[in-house]
Image 1: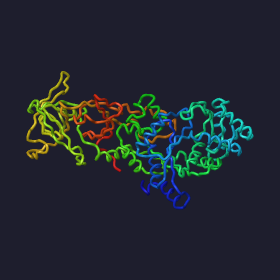
Image 2: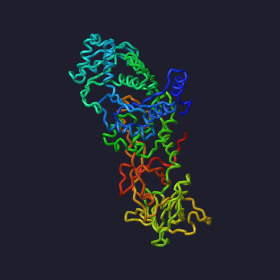
Image 3: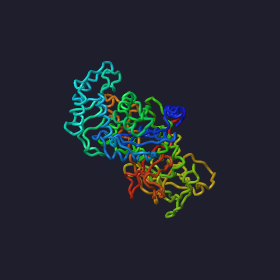
Image 4: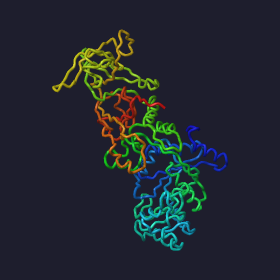
Length: 552
């Protein structure tokens, strides 16, 4: 990470130099209630990257304090995503590992007169809390005795009350200008089976209470989170202090990462998945890590993108083209070059010998000669792109049209002589001739042509499906958390965000495996789709086009 773009690095460096800290321990603490997205990748890169840089360690911890929303599927997916991004955690923990400890700390608060059992409903608690301009008012249950609170809290744990009947609240300050300190709820009743602890518990700690305890128990030195938790930092420090934790982690906030033309809210992503707008959490149009992986983005590209986006306090939205830039940079020397025709138009080369096949040489990647060469078959019948022919072209159109000559990439010059149409007047075949003297690499200098077309041999070509993607969300304005402004986000879903076409590829692609990546001449970078590819047909997701107007 850039020295001048990371204020967190400066804080850590000063802490170590001053002796305030003698080591660096960070953690990545997702809630297992959905799949990770590109915003989480920023947190992963920051937490693991900074710890690595200062010789520290990073824990992976699942904040699983809400059994109604969490699932083992999400736990497994998150672990896979972190590993795929290239990071190894020191310890693997769950908030639920500490439920006994958290209960004991809550009892400690009650004994110190700093927590009480409240019978108010959620709506009543909200009403009593006050507003930003008006102080809250005390609950009528705020002055219960320590003995009564201890008894009620134990009975809550033992399952004697129903959901919502009672909560445990911290007793802090109902007139505090920080609403988070107005006696926040720290335990609620939830008769639900937990993915990790089963039915042992029917009360669960709130995130704001559990998180600082977890950090302290694990010896986290720098608790890095997004700026939405900045107002909760005083509560974080209060919990660490009043629960008498031995370690004192420091919470530091940084700005969230958002992308244009997508959504980053787990709630919205879940809605898109459950209502069938996309093909699961790993749909290549989603900003989820699994979706980006399936589309073909590389972990190297994502890491470099996050570093380039920088670390600041500000909330910002980054152009999605910036992410695409980094995957192009990563793949240009790695991805083999090949040719694929997405919308085929048959071409018969009438003066090429029938039954003859020649194998042409081509570089696997001209920008990386060490990758070697490949063999491409060429014969009398080939496919070209429908878009590479026009019967009545405009001026300065240099591809195929009647009477025009073009170069076939790695092969010969061909000239269009005849156009064959079906009964509906649609062009279905072109009749061309080739010039044997113009073979690529032969040194022919007799004449020049301005158009170069890609193609595949019709006899040997393999059928393939190509999935072409456009932005999922048409509105590229910054996403806001205001529900009223976002309730119609589904109206902005791009119905044309996915186009599926069927064409042909070179026969040397027969051994391509899921997640293999290629650059198709003129079309862009593609990834073999791991979900829909079969033995009969390869399916390719376009990762990005070849070029973009975006500049760093």
